[in-house]
Length: 94
Image (cartoon, rainbow, N blue to C red; front, top):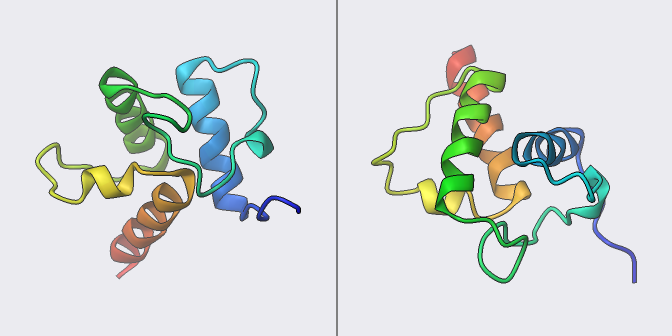
């Protein structure tokens, strides 16, 4: 069974995760879009989440509120991060 195909944005975000967190033994395509980023998935922790949030804000010029009740959902996987970034881009475009 083949892994789900990555969208261009998902690959871009997966590479940003790798670069930001120095996960040099991984390639963007190695991170399935729906794989959890925390816990049993990629194994990231809260410090990684902060670093990743800063990188996303800088790279995509988006705002991620630390008290956002949906932050945990946004950071669940590469796919959910891609959906969040896409939604933020749409809001900024309006």
